[in-house]
Length: 96
Image (cartoon, rainbow, N blue to C red; front, side):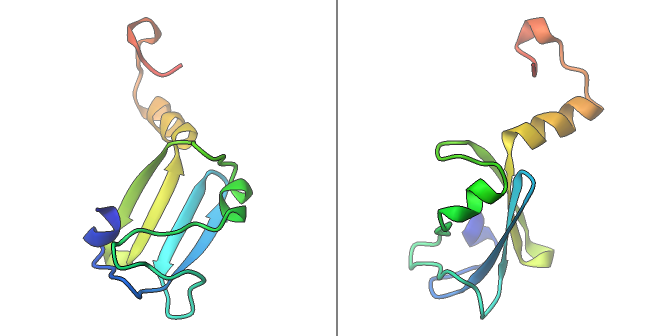
């Protein structure tokens, strides 16, 4: 659904990059993977490890249509960003 929100279709080629705890996909004719008919992105096995993610880790997907970009943030990064701006009570199910 997030890939479709960007208007990406089967045959589009995203370029994938990884940094600390985030993977970025941008549509690029020279991209390393091809979006299949049912829009989703296949991530090469080495890429998640490069940014500290493991198989089964949950991520927050963020589509940025104005930049034709999809970002996948680890929950560790999301929790850190939220805790820097919002105080969650630990004893009521908040971030630990």
